[in-house]
Image 1 (tube, one colour):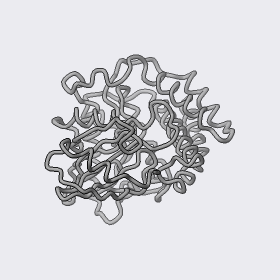
Image 2 (cartoon, rainbow, N blue to C red):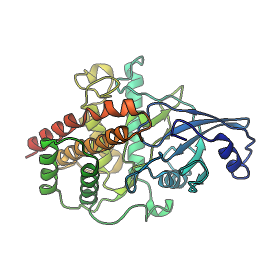
Image 3 (cartoon, rainbow, N blue to C red):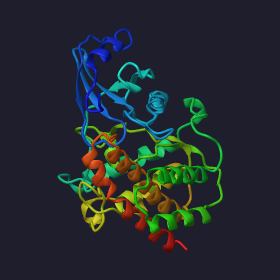
Amino acid sequence: MNDTELDTAAISEWLNGRLEGFDGPVKAVKFSGGQSNPTYRLETAAGNYVLRRKPSGILLKSAHAVDREYRVQKALAAGEVPVAQVHALCEDDAVIGSAFYIMDEVAGRIFDDPRLPGLDPSERDALMDEMNRVLASIHNVDLAAAGLSDYGPPGNYYRRQLDRWRQQYEKTKTDDLPDMETLILWLDENMPADDGQCTLVHGDYRLDNLIFAHDSAECRAVLDWELSTLGHPYADLAAVVMQWSMPTGREGRGLAGVDRAAAGLWSDERFIEMYCHRRGLGSIDGFGYYLAFSYFRMAAILQGVKKRALDGNAADPERGLKLGTHVPEFARQGLATARSSR
């Protein structure tokens, strides 16, 4: 059975006694667009839920960690960070072929395009403010109180991440990209000293991983915690700025060339300034390094998506191959950012 199908009878049997109020049978509908953990709406007589599972096939070590997604959302349930309520985790591959977990389906709006078409400037401004607030809330989580003090290894986060993604890239690369190799070398040689900041890091924080209320700018849930860990908060912040530098449209999902002020969309500078204000920080020195690293990391992630598509393990192979064509551009922009930071 592949990732587009689910053994709904096996899921129904497993959920009996584990999900309060559950009364089978289950109908499963796969969500489109995701490139990592296949995600499905479970329609039941008791209501709708969401199931996220590991992909099938051979996977990279530590990738697709649905158990970590489950743990962090459960830990955050009573705090300031909005998350979906999780209900059950299955780590027995024998049930449907891979580990999975069940959470509530959260009603609301998801915006794939950061230009926020169809909204007026005041609405866009409010959504940018809420996106900023939630990011600061993630980084302000009391790790001890949330039971997440051991959620990531100790030590220099950027050293750890550079080593990890360099290894992942080497295992999945399909072409020689001199820009990527040069960028990796620059990141290695120019790594900033560890400043001691260690927070919860989402790892893929962007607008389309947030669910907003239908009638307000309130964020109702932060999605896709697969890459979350303990680390340096500027990784999430730089990733937002990096995403906005991309071309507009479905593939780039960026704001390149957009008159943000006229549209009610925040500038990079305002987003960083308000983030620092909310976290009680001064200005950020050497932001260019964090931004260059974000380009490198995204290039490595998309290279993995491309390799899974070529190997037949991607959730959406056609889209995975298309996303993989952007790897050289992320490497190029990362290297340009690095060189301009000297």
